[in-house]
Image (cartoon, rainbow over the protein chains, first blue to last red):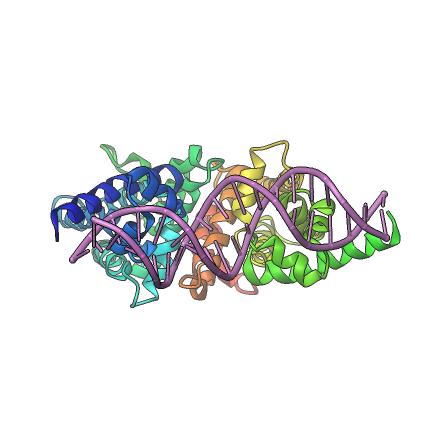
Length: 196
Length: 196
DNA sequence: ACCTGAACACCGTTCAAGT
DNA sequence: ACCTGAACACCGTTCAAGT
Protein backbone atom coordinates (compact mmCIF):
# COMPACT_ATOMS: atom_id res chain seq x y z
CA UNK A 1 0.00 0.00 0.00
CA UNK A 2 1.29 3.45 -0.87
CA UNK A 3 2.32 5.63 2.04
CA UNK A 4 -0.47 8.18 1.54
CA UNK A 5 -3.04 5.42 1.20
CA UNK A 6 -1.89 3.80 4.42
CA UNK A 7 -2.08 7.11 6.23
CA UNK A 8 -5.66 7.63 5.02
CA UNK A 9 -6.61 4.09 5.97
CA UNK A 10 -5.37 4.53 9.50
CA UNK A 11 -6.87 7.98 9.88
CA UNK A 12 -10.23 6.62 8.73
CA UNK A 13 -10.08 3.72 11.13
CA UNK A 14 -9.22 5.93 14.10
CA UNK A 15 -12.00 8.38 13.24
CA UNK A 16 -14.49 5.59 12.63
CA UNK A 17 -13.73 4.17 16.07
CA UNK A 18 -14.56 7.55 17.60
CA UNK A 19 -17.70 8.18 15.60
CA UNK A 20 -19.09 4.65 15.92
CA UNK A 21 -18.43 4.73 19.65
CA UNK A 22 -20.47 7.92 19.84
CA UNK A 23 -23.25 7.18 17.37
CA UNK A 24 -23.38 3.42 16.94
CA UNK A 25 -22.94 1.20 13.91
CA UNK A 26 -25.39 3.25 11.83
CA UNK A 27 -23.21 6.35 12.07
CA UNK A 28 -22.99 8.50 8.95
CA UNK A 29 -20.13 7.39 6.70
CA UNK A 30 -20.03 10.89 5.25
CA UNK A 31 -19.47 12.21 8.73
CA UNK A 32 -16.61 9.78 9.29
CA UNK A 33 -14.92 10.76 6.02
CA UNK A 34 -15.43 14.44 6.82
CA UNK A 35 -13.98 14.17 10.31
CA UNK A 36 -11.10 12.08 8.99
CA UNK A 37 -10.36 14.83 6.49
CA UNK A 38 -10.60 12.59 3.41
CA UNK A 39 -12.95 12.41 0.48
CA UNK A 40 -15.97 10.15 0.70
CA UNK A 41 -14.65 8.06 -2.19
CA UNK A 42 -11.51 7.33 -0.22
CA UNK A 43 -13.56 5.82 2.58
CA UNK A 44 -15.38 3.60 0.07
CA UNK A 45 -12.07 2.61 -1.56
CA UNK A 46 -10.68 1.33 1.72
CA UNK A 47 -13.94 0.04 3.17
CA UNK A 48 -16.29 -0.95 0.36
CA UNK A 49 -19.10 -1.84 2.77
CA UNK A 50 -20.09 -0.88 6.29
CA UNK A 51 -19.40 -4.47 7.35
CA UNK A 52 -15.79 -4.23 6.20
CA UNK A 53 -15.32 -1.10 8.30
CA UNK A 54 -16.98 -2.66 11.33
CA UNK A 55 -14.95 -5.79 10.92
CA UNK A 56 -11.74 -3.76 10.96
CA UNK A 57 -12.91 -2.07 14.17
CA UNK A 58 -13.92 -5.31 15.85
CA UNK A 59 -11.19 -7.71 14.85
CA UNK A 60 -8.76 -6.76 17.62
CA UNK A 61 -11.45 -6.93 20.28
CA UNK A 62 -12.65 -10.32 19.12
CA UNK A 63 -9.21 -11.82 18.81
CA UNK A 64 -8.69 -10.63 22.38
CA UNK A 65 -11.91 -12.33 23.50
CA UNK A 66 -10.87 -15.64 22.00
CA UNK A 67 -7.55 -15.56 23.85
CA UNK A 68 -9.43 -14.56 26.97
CA UNK A 69 -11.69 -17.59 26.60
CA UNK A 70 -8.64 -19.86 26.58
CA UNK A 71 -7.22 -18.15 29.67
CA UNK A 72 -10.48 -18.45 31.56
CA UNK A 73 -10.87 -22.08 30.60
CA UNK A 74 -7.44 -22.82 32.03
CA UNK A 75 -7.74 -20.80 35.20
CA UNK A 76 -11.30 -20.91 36.50
CA UNK A 77 -14.06 -23.37 37.28
CA UNK A 78 -16.11 -23.98 34.11
CA UNK A 79 -19.23 -22.10 35.21
CA UNK A 80 -17.26 -19.09 36.36
CA UNK A 81 -15.22 -19.10 33.14
CA UNK A 82 -18.41 -19.15 31.10
CA UNK A 83 -20.08 -16.33 32.99
CA UNK A 84 -16.97 -14.17 32.97
CA UNK A 85 -16.55 -14.68 29.23
CA UNK A 86 -20.18 -13.79 28.73
CA UNK A 87 -19.82 -10.61 30.72
CA UNK A 88 -16.69 -9.53 28.87
CA UNK A 89 -18.22 -10.29 25.48
CA UNK A 90 -21.22 -8.15 26.29
CA UNK A 91 -18.82 -5.45 27.46
CA UNK A 92 -16.97 -5.45 24.16
CA UNK A 93 -20.25 -5.36 22.23
CA UNK A 94 -21.38 -2.38 24.25
CA UNK A 95 -18.61 -0.28 22.72
CA UNK A 96 -20.51 -0.13 19.43
CA UNK A 97 -24.24 0.39 19.75
CA UNK A 98 -26.17 -1.94 17.49
CA UNK A 99 -23.25 -4.17 16.58
CA UNK A 100 -25.01 -7.37 17.64
CA UNK A 101 -27.87 -6.78 15.22
CA UNK A 102 -25.26 -6.58 12.47
CA UNK A 103 -23.55 -9.71 13.72
CA UNK A 104 -26.85 -11.54 13.98
CA UNK A 105 -27.36 -10.82 10.28
CA UNK A 106 -23.78 -11.86 9.49
CA UNK A 107 -23.81 -15.19 11.27
CA UNK A 108 -26.39 -16.52 8.82
CA UNK A 109 -24.59 -15.01 5.82
CA UNK A 110 -21.34 -16.67 4.87
CA UNK A 111 -20.61 -13.97 2.32
CA UNK A 112 -20.50 -11.28 4.99
CA UNK A 113 -17.15 -9.91 6.07
CA UNK A 114 -18.30 -10.15 9.67
CA UNK A 115 -19.13 -13.83 9.37
CA UNK A 116 -15.73 -15.09 10.52
CA UNK A 117 -15.72 -12.93 13.65
CA UNK A 118 -19.21 -14.15 14.54
CA UNK A 119 -18.29 -17.77 14.13
CA UNK A 120 -15.12 -17.29 16.17
CA UNK A 121 -17.02 -15.66 18.99
CA UNK A 122 -19.70 -18.30 18.95
CA UNK A 123 -17.11 -21.07 18.97
CA UNK A 124 -15.29 -19.62 21.97
CA UNK A 125 -18.56 -19.39 23.87
CA UNK A 126 -19.65 -22.85 22.80
CA UNK A 127 -16.40 -24.32 24.12
CA UNK A 128 -16.82 -22.73 27.55
CA UNK A 129 -20.47 -23.73 27.59
CA UNK A 130 -19.57 -27.34 26.83
CA UNK A 131 -17.08 -27.27 29.71
CA UNK A 132 -19.71 -26.08 32.14
CA UNK A 133 -22.20 -28.59 30.79
CA UNK A 134 -19.69 -31.41 31.28
CA UNK A 135 -19.22 -30.25 34.85
CA UNK A 136 -23.00 -30.24 35.28
CA UNK A 137 -23.15 -26.53 36.05
CA UNK A 138 -24.80 -25.29 32.85
CA UNK A 139 -28.10 -26.41 31.35
CA UNK A 140 -27.58 -29.24 28.93
CA UNK A 141 -30.21 -28.06 26.44
CA UNK A 142 -28.28 -25.07 25.13
CA UNK A 143 -25.63 -24.58 22.47
CA UNK A 144 -23.34 -21.88 21.16
CA UNK A 145 -26.05 -20.37 18.99
CA UNK A 146 -28.25 -19.84 22.05
CA UNK A 147 -25.38 -18.23 23.88
CA UNK A 148 -24.72 -15.96 20.92
CA UNK A 149 -28.37 -14.93 20.90
CA UNK A 150 -28.33 -14.20 24.62
CA UNK A 151 -25.25 -12.02 24.20
CA UNK A 152 -27.27 -10.15 21.58
CA UNK A 153 -30.20 -9.75 23.94
CA UNK A 154 -27.96 -8.44 26.72
CA UNK A 155 -26.20 -6.07 24.34
CA UNK A 156 -29.57 -4.77 23.17
CA UNK A 157 -30.65 -4.15 26.75
CA UNK A 158 -27.43 -2.24 27.35
CA UNK A 159 -28.03 -0.15 24.22
CA UNK A 160 -31.33 1.21 25.54
CA UNK A 161 -30.64 4.05 27.93
CA UNK A 162 -33.81 3.25 29.89
CA UNK A 163 -32.54 -0.27 30.63
CA UNK A 164 -28.80 0.34 30.87
CA UNK A 165 -28.89 1.27 34.59
CA UNK A 166 -30.15 -2.25 35.29
CA UNK A 167 -27.75 -4.01 32.94
CA UNK A 168 -26.03 -5.78 35.83
CA UNK A 169 -29.36 -7.12 37.16
CA UNK A 170 -30.39 -8.34 33.74
CA UNK A 171 -27.04 -9.96 33.23
CA UNK A 172 -27.57 -11.80 36.49
CA UNK A 173 -31.03 -12.96 35.50
CA UNK A 174 -29.92 -14.31 32.15
CA UNK A 175 -26.61 -15.74 33.31
CA UNK A 176 -28.57 -17.42 36.08
CA UNK A 177 -30.82 -19.01 33.48
CA UNK A 178 -27.82 -20.59 31.79
CA UNK A 179 -26.36 -22.09 34.94
CA UNK A 180 -28.00 -24.97 36.70
CA UNK A 181 -26.95 -23.68 40.08
CA UNK A 182 -29.33 -21.29 41.79
CA UNK A 183 -26.34 -19.30 43.05
CA UNK A 184 -26.29 -15.74 41.83
CA UNK A 185 -23.62 -15.27 39.16
CA UNK A 186 -23.11 -11.80 40.59
CA UNK A 187 -21.35 -13.19 43.65
CA UNK A 188 -18.59 -15.12 41.96
CA UNK A 189 -15.78 -13.42 43.83
CA UNK A 190 -15.37 -15.42 47.04
CA UNK A 191 -18.31 -17.16 48.69
CA UNK A 192 -19.98 -19.61 46.36
CA UNK A 193 -23.07 -21.60 47.12
CA UNK A 194 -22.99 -25.21 46.11
CA UNK A 195 -24.45 -26.21 42.79
CA UNK A 196 -27.83 -27.95 43.03
CA UNK B 1 -63.20 16.20 11.66
CA UNK B 2 -64.25 16.89 8.09
CA UNK B 3 -65.34 13.87 6.08
CA UNK B 4 -62.41 14.02 3.64
CA UNK B 5 -59.96 14.43 6.52
CA UNK B 6 -61.38 11.42 8.31
CA UNK B 7 -61.13 9.35 5.16
CA UNK B 8 -57.47 10.32 4.74
CA UNK B 9 -56.77 9.59 8.39
CA UNK B 10 -58.19 6.10 8.15
CA UNK B 11 -56.53 5.39 4.84
CA UNK B 12 -53.19 6.45 6.29
CA UNK B 13 -53.62 4.29 9.35
CA UNK B 14 -54.52 1.21 7.31
CA UNK B 15 -51.59 1.73 4.97
CA UNK B 16 -49.21 2.41 7.85
CA UNK B 17 -50.23 -0.86 9.47
CA UNK B 18 -49.33 -2.69 6.27
CA UNK B 19 -46.04 -0.91 5.67
CA UNK B 20 -44.85 -1.03 9.29
CA UNK B 21 -45.72 -4.71 9.45
CA UNK B 22 -43.53 -5.27 6.41
CA UNK B 23 -40.65 -2.89 7.11
CA UNK B 24 -40.70 -2.18 10.83
CA UNK B 25 -41.08 1.04 12.79
CA UNK B 26 -38.42 2.82 10.74
CA UNK B 27 -40.42 2.44 7.55
CA UNK B 28 -40.37 5.40 5.18
CA UNK B 29 -43.13 7.89 5.94
CA UNK B 30 -42.95 9.06 2.35
CA UNK B 31 -43.68 5.53 1.24
CA UNK B 32 -46.68 5.31 3.55
CA UNK B 33 -48.13 8.56 2.23
CA UNK B 34 -47.47 7.49 -1.34
CA UNK B 35 -49.13 4.11 -0.91
CA UNK B 36 -52.03 5.72 0.92
CA UNK B 37 -52.50 8.05 -2.05
CA UNK B 38 -52.19 11.27 -0.03
CA UNK B 39 -49.68 14.08 0.07
CA UNK B 40 -46.80 13.86 2.51
CA UNK B 41 -48.04 16.96 4.28
CA UNK B 42 -51.33 15.23 5.00
CA UNK B 43 -49.53 12.45 6.82
CA UNK B 44 -47.71 15.04 8.94
CA UNK B 45 -50.94 16.90 9.61
CA UNK B 46 -52.60 13.81 11.06
CA UNK B 47 -49.50 12.28 12.63
CA UNK B 48 -47.06 15.04 13.54
CA UNK B 49 -44.43 12.57 14.77
CA UNK B 50 -43.60 8.93 14.14
CA UNK B 51 -44.55 8.19 17.75
CA UNK B 52 -48.07 9.52 17.22
CA UNK B 53 -48.49 7.21 14.23
CA UNK B 54 -47.08 4.20 16.10
CA UNK B 55 -49.26 4.98 19.07
CA UNK B 56 -52.34 4.95 16.88
CA UNK B 57 -51.28 1.56 15.50
CA UNK B 58 -50.55 0.09 18.91
CA UNK B 59 -53.32 1.44 21.08
CA UNK B 60 -55.86 -1.26 20.20
CA UNK B 61 -53.34 -4.05 20.72
CA UNK B 62 -52.26 -2.69 24.08
CA UNK B 63 -55.75 -2.08 25.34
CA UNK B 64 -56.39 -5.71 24.41
CA UNK B 65 -53.35 -6.86 26.36
CA UNK B 66 -54.46 -5.05 29.47
CA UNK B 67 -57.87 -6.72 29.35
CA UNK B 68 -56.14 -10.01 28.69
CA UNK B 69 -54.02 -9.54 31.81
CA UNK B 70 -57.16 -9.17 33.91
CA UNK B 71 -58.69 -12.31 32.34
CA UNK B 72 -55.56 -14.35 32.97
CA UNK B 73 -55.30 -13.15 36.52
CA UNK B 74 -58.83 -14.30 37.19
CA UNK B 75 -58.62 -17.66 35.43
CA UNK B 76 -55.14 -19.13 35.83
CA UNK B 77 -52.57 -19.86 38.50
CA UNK B 78 -50.39 -16.77 38.98
CA UNK B 79 -47.24 -18.17 37.36
CA UNK B 80 -49.09 -19.45 34.33
CA UNK B 81 -50.95 -16.14 33.99
CA UNK B 82 -47.65 -14.27 34.08
CA UNK B 83 -45.95 -16.46 31.49
CA UNK B 84 -48.94 -16.43 29.17
CA UNK B 85 -49.17 -12.65 29.39
CA UNK B 86 -45.47 -12.41 28.66
CA UNK B 87 -45.79 -14.61 25.63
CA UNK B 88 -48.73 -12.69 24.22
CA UNK B 89 -47.07 -9.34 24.83
CA UNK B 90 -43.99 -10.47 22.93
CA UNK B 91 -46.30 -11.70 20.19
CA UNK B 92 -47.96 -8.32 19.83
CA UNK B 93 -44.58 -6.59 19.80
CA UNK B 94 -43.41 -8.89 17.03
CA UNK B 95 -45.99 -7.39 14.67
CA UNK B 96 -43.89 -4.24 14.39
CA UNK B 97 -40.17 -4.79 14.11
CA UNK B 98 -38.22 -2.44 16.37
CA UNK B 99 -41.20 -1.21 18.35
CA UNK B 100 -39.68 -2.12 21.71
CA UNK B 101 -36.67 0.10 21.11
CA UNK B 102 -39.08 2.95 20.55
CA UNK B 103 -41.03 2.04 23.67
CA UNK B 104 -37.84 1.76 25.69
CA UNK B 105 -37.10 5.35 24.73
CA UNK B 106 -40.68 6.40 25.50
CA UNK B 107 -40.93 4.90 28.95
CA UNK B 108 -38.29 7.29 30.25
CA UNK B 109 -39.82 10.25 28.42
CA UNK B 110 -43.10 11.51 29.83
CA UNK B 111 -43.53 13.87 26.89
CA UNK B 112 -43.67 11.00 24.40
CA UNK B 113 -47.00 10.01 22.93
CA UNK B 114 -46.09 6.39 23.52
CA UNK B 115 -45.41 6.93 27.20
CA UNK B 116 -48.93 6.07 28.35
CA UNK B 117 -49.02 2.79 26.45
CA UNK B 118 -45.65 1.81 27.91
CA UNK B 119 -46.73 2.55 31.44
CA UNK B 120 -49.97 0.65 30.93
CA UNK B 121 -48.17 -2.40 29.62
CA UNK B 122 -45.63 -2.30 32.41
CA UNK B 123 -48.35 -1.96 35.02
CA UNK B 124 -50.26 -4.96 33.70
CA UNK B 125 -47.09 -7.05 33.79
CA UNK B 126 -46.13 -5.78 37.22
CA UNK B 127 -49.52 -6.81 38.60
CA UNK B 128 -49.22 -10.36 37.29
CA UNK B 129 -45.64 -10.53 38.49
CA UNK B 130 -46.68 -9.43 41.98
CA UNK B 131 -49.31 -12.17 42.00
CA UNK B 132 -46.78 -14.83 41.14
CA UNK B 133 -44.35 -13.42 43.68
CA UNK B 134 -47.02 -13.55 46.38
CA UNK B 135 -47.62 -17.19 45.46
CA UNK B 136 -43.90 -17.82 45.69
CA UNK B 137 -43.59 -18.88 42.05
CA UNK B 138 -41.70 -15.86 40.69
CA UNK B 139 -38.39 -14.46 41.88
CA UNK B 140 -38.93 -11.82 44.50
CA UNK B 141 -36.12 -9.59 43.28
CA UNK B 142 -37.78 -8.39 40.08
CA UNK B 143 -40.24 -5.64 39.24
CA UNK B 144 -42.32 -4.41 36.33
CA UNK B 145 -39.40 -2.53 34.81
CA UNK B 146 -37.36 -5.72 34.64
CA UNK B 147 -40.25 -7.52 33.02
CA UNK B 148 -40.62 -4.71 30.49
CA UNK B 149 -36.92 -4.97 29.68
CA UNK B 150 -37.13 -8.73 29.21
CA UNK B 151 -40.06 -8.31 26.83
CA UNK B 152 -37.80 -5.95 24.90
CA UNK B 153 -34.98 -8.49 24.85
CA UNK B 154 -37.31 -11.24 23.62
CA UNK B 155 -38.80 -8.96 20.98
CA UNK B 156 -35.30 -8.07 19.79
CA UNK B 157 -34.41 -11.74 19.50
CA UNK B 158 -37.55 -12.32 17.47
CA UNK B 159 -36.66 -9.40 15.19
CA UNK B 160 -33.36 -11.00 14.13
CA UNK B 161 -34.05 -13.57 11.45
CA UNK B 162 -31.05 -15.63 12.57
CA UNK B 163 -32.54 -16.01 16.04
CA UNK B 164 -36.23 -16.09 15.25
CA UNK B 165 -36.34 -19.87 14.62
CA UNK B 166 -35.30 -20.36 18.25
CA UNK B 167 -37.65 -17.77 19.68
CA UNK B 168 -39.62 -20.41 21.54
CA UNK B 169 -36.44 -21.81 23.16
CA UNK B 170 -35.30 -18.36 24.20
CA UNK B 171 -38.69 -17.57 25.58
CA UNK B 172 -38.44 -20.71 27.67
CA UNK B 173 -35.00 -19.80 28.96
CA UNK B 174 -35.98 -16.29 29.98
CA UNK B 175 -39.42 -17.17 31.30
CA UNK B 176 -37.72 -19.90 33.31
CA UNK B 177 -35.41 -17.30 34.81
CA UNK B 178 -38.38 -15.33 36.09
CA UNK B 179 -40.10 -18.27 37.73
CA UNK B 180 -38.73 -19.87 40.87
CA UNK B 181 -39.92 -23.29 39.79
CA UNK B 182 -37.56 -25.33 37.66
CA UNK B 183 -40.49 -26.54 35.59
CA UNK B 184 -40.24 -25.61 31.97
CA UNK B 185 -42.72 -22.85 31.13
CA UNK B 186 -43.15 -24.53 27.76
CA UNK B 187 -45.16 -27.35 29.30
CA UNK B 188 -47.90 -25.37 30.92
CA UNK B 189 -50.74 -27.16 29.19
CA UNK B 190 -51.51 -30.19 31.33
CA UNK B 191 -48.78 -31.89 33.34
CA UNK B 192 -47.10 -29.48 35.72
CA UNK B 193 -44.17 -30.24 37.98
CA UNK B 194 -44.44 -28.92 41.50
CA UNK B 195 -42.98 -25.51 42.30
CA UNK B 196 -39.76 -25.53 44.33
C1' DA C 1 -60.04 23.42 7.28
C1' DC C 2 -57.58 20.76 4.88
C1' DC C 3 -54.47 19.15 1.09
C1' DT C 4 -50.39 19.31 -1.90
C1' DG C 5 -45.79 19.07 -3.29
C1' DA C 6 -41.66 21.88 -3.72
C1' DA C 7 -37.74 23.07 -0.88
C1' DC C 8 -34.07 22.13 2.37
C1' DA C 9 -30.68 19.54 4.61
C1' DC C 10 -29.39 15.33 5.16
C1' DC C 11 -28.21 10.04 3.70
C1' DG C 12 -25.63 5.86 0.98
C1' DT C 13 -23.47 4.77 -3.20
C1' DT C 14 -21.21 5.35 -7.68
C1' DC C 15 -18.03 7.13 -10.84
C1' DA C 16 -15.79 10.59 -14.10
C1' DA C 17 -12.14 13.60 -13.56
C1' DG C 18 -8.04 14.73 -11.63
C1' DT C 19 -2.91 13.95 -9.50
C1' DA D 1 -2.52 4.02 -7.65
C1' DC D 2 -4.96 6.74 -5.36
C1' DC D 3 -7.92 10.77 -4.20
C1' DT D 4 -11.85 13.95 -4.80
C1' DG D 5 -16.37 15.59 -4.94
C1' DA D 6 -20.29 16.02 -8.02
C1' DA D 7 -24.31 13.31 -9.23
C1' DC D 8 -28.19 10.34 -8.28
C1' DA D 9 -31.84 8.48 -5.72
C1' DC D 10 -33.37 8.32 -1.55
C1' DC D 11 -34.75 10.22 3.51
C1' DG D 12 -37.40 13.41 7.36
C1' DT D 13 -39.39 17.77 8.02
C1' DT D 14 -41.34 22.32 6.99
C1' DC D 15 -44.23 25.50 4.81
C1' DA D 16 -46.08 28.57 1.01
C1' DA D 17 -49.60 28.02 -2.17
C1' DG D 18 -53.74 26.22 -3.38
C1' DT D 19 -58.98 24.46 -2.73
